[in-house]
Image (cartoon, rainbow, N blue to C red; front, side, top):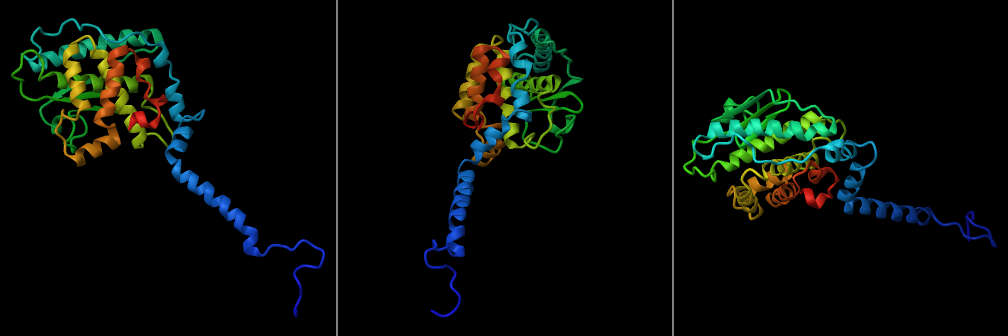
Length: 279
């Protein structure tokens, strides 16, 4: 054989370049493939790593130190649907009392929203004026709760006004998230879609907890209609957009049930929940 030999008799033949790097390539392929397959699990794990924003929120004293939520809400009109504005304003005062009492045991000073604005159209709100698909919106910078109010409903028993009452309680929950510091976090995962879903589903849970004793049967009706997708009659496109940022209707109903049953902030810790429960 002409030419230099790349190995000598009696030595273990040395692998060619391809044979030498093939095992490395295989290991790399396995790692990359596993990362792709387990992407959501890895993100979930990284999100709960010590020092992450999600880990800090999940361990907040808000969950273990707060007092019970709920109550009969003294001051609500006997006929909830007789005057929408009067009912929602009375509920706002009730929610202020509820959250002040609930946060006191945790050593958190409750601050009322700067304003509760009942609006007839999005243009009248303090923020979100260019969006037209919300029933309520919380303006964090201004501390203003906005609720879109329809004409006075025809049902004096509150069946038609209760979704607006729930919206008010939901936006109040966003205000509480700001007060306790849950929504004032830094980090790469903050306010991506996964973060938004946990924030919104927690607000659903807290809203249900605060309304659990106000009109339980109406809360049951609203929750069940969400669970079966009959509340909004939304198109699949709208439902998909809502699912990305707020979680599915079914997930909303499940977190509402948790809040309604427990009546506590601790039951609404969406930050500790696995991804499948906040999707």
